[in-house]
Image 1: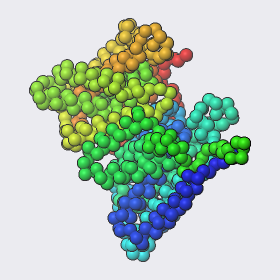
Image 2: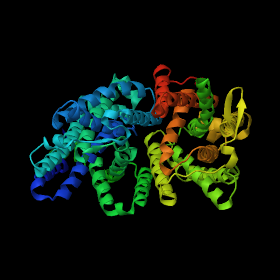
Image 3: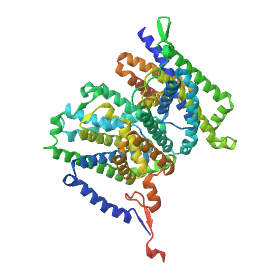
Image 4: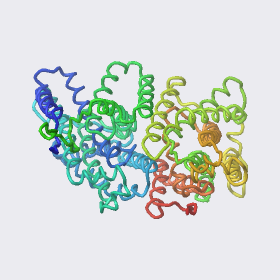
Length: 336
Length: 287
């Protein structure tokens, strides 16, 4: 008998994943401009979805207010480059640090709310952020502002180089986020988190500090979401309170991605992102009807297959591409 | 005097917020369901009212005769058809399903009525006012506040003095034992949602008379209702009215300092209560 984490499916996934990743890194040499923009957007949504999934699917923190950090990160990119004179790349890292700092007092307040009330509390917080940034006239107030041309130019020489850099940054953050979630869940802390998800009372009686574990997840998620937000608005080059703190763009879509793909799995957000963009590219001409279809699909998935597409796959084939659990494998010789 | 005026107007505004909150509070109390689509249902009621008014030429308040039963029916069907299947120990299904509903209602309204702001015309009622001392009070805000008091008193009476209220309290305390005592919890939940959406219908019509509305304003109404519930304390309907009043007063005082601060001041009042007294100001004593 052997106890192992990997499986042949996981090994194949590593190989295929590496090949895909190399192809994606090389995209500036083979993909067109429009394709790269789309891919960049896909990566940023993938990062947002993986982060939301870590909170909702593992830490039990269902937030409908992550747009607070997306918008905050975007605004910090603008503030740090325009007023702080920092280069954009440094400003993105700075947005992450500031995101973590602001997440601490926010968490202290809204962790007083439980369950579903926590969810609406996060939304209130996002509204507070939006209203405050709408009051800051230096950043354009309610109508927003654009990133000055010389700051954009300072990123790289020429438009192609800039677009390639922006693409790599998006790809980079998606890879970093997924790797961070994966490694975190495999660690001791991740085990504690899984224990809390399965049974809070039992986890507490084993000596796990529930509040602290959730707090750490919330703050780290806030920091990374702020960095993703900075990258989103580095691509858009324009920010306004309504766009930055949009509940539809940065939370509703992200929730659909995770629910459809499979909540509480690392694979789920990846599948969900692909499905979401496939639907969007084919149905978005329908406008509002498309959004209604999306809402309907999410409801049906939640009622009929609460573990999403990846949950169905896993139930059928017992696959795990990102091995988190351990499995016991019986050696052939043991049977005799 | 300006400040007294702001406080009085804020108090009256609080009546509307309490109506937003009453339905939310009721369904949370009975089945521990937090309905993210609540604000969109308020807006849906406003649009239903608008449709009735345009089709029949009735006064918006008389449109309630149609809108309340329609919303109640929608509530019962919604609960029995969808929401009952989401209830359980897991928090996610009800939250995400009502979130999906919210998106569907919002975009459905957008499809049918476009994004143009609409308003219901209540004729002379909108501008009528009377003097009280040196203050001038609008008839509509006073009427709204009075309706809120009547609705909450009615719900309170229903909860503690009628058979259906007893059934609500029974399923709220223990669903399984209530079921053993011969109550059909699925039906009771359906009735609770019907009642909640009936109240929501009143809130929606009053909202539509007071201000203009468009399909996107639902989220904001949900947040106001939610803040009123938390400020007042969970499970206490009169507390919810007090919460609505505090929120309304904070908003009018904020608006007085700077018009851009109106909504923000309400949120800040909510956050202060959350920081100082997270169980709300008047929580129900729980065993």
